[in-house]
Image (cartoon, rainbow, N blue to C red; front, side, top):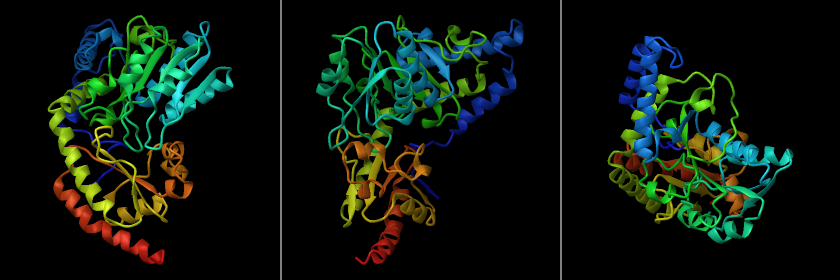
Length: 383
């Protein structure tokens, strides 16, 4: 079995799973309880918060635990809008954001906010100039993802951050979910970033847990009220075992990060070399410094993406259409549509997403097997 769908989710690391099990068994008290069991759980929780803060290079009180990337994006987008509504009701988001950002923005539009959706060029990048042009006196938020989850384009976060230094009251949010472990920290988390979203299951942690970085002093309305957990900004009994496991997963992901990213890039290069030699294959994720090392989006002209996914699965190779969150809806890639790729080609797109655990032998096996799939469709299409 060859698993090439790591941008959808990664397999939990055995050491991370062991941490989860240990904490679940030994630190099962509620961190809010005043007795000894609660104190032990609270200490574990704060230890995990400190470790994550050290890795992100921020203060512990700037880390807030969530249920994952979707909640984090919703919280920052809607929380900013609500907290700053007296100062302005205009938001700027890129047209290629994750649905958690885009649908949050659309919901706010229905409630009276105005949203500018930044276009991307034909390669899949927001231009800093478009950000500057979109800013208005009533703008309260700019949200641009670090790494696009469909084609892997690394957005110009540093350049956007430089522009926003001239607008210190505008919140700058980065969805950093696809960036962990890819040797991109300095490029996607410059000082001007106010909020960043992370999800554990993208870096070998458990599902259902994540965190946001929220810079001190930045206004953010509470969306989940209750018992006052997370500094009274995100209530709900903390999932201590998952949070402890996430902190370990993050530490492991950032260990030898450069060599892991280089390994993934070498595998991607081999795949690109193979696929680009095949007629009727279009590659949307070239091997350049502006694209992530782990994502390779391509289309087999004339064959719908889900058809390629299922044909590959029959050979025990697991790919995905361009986004796991929308793959079952059968719609074209939102990113490719924003890039003005023709619909017929966009609906043919599939995504390979790699991990440092993938091997050269797996790539060789893919190169050996995929021609069977390819030739079958070529024959069906009369080529």
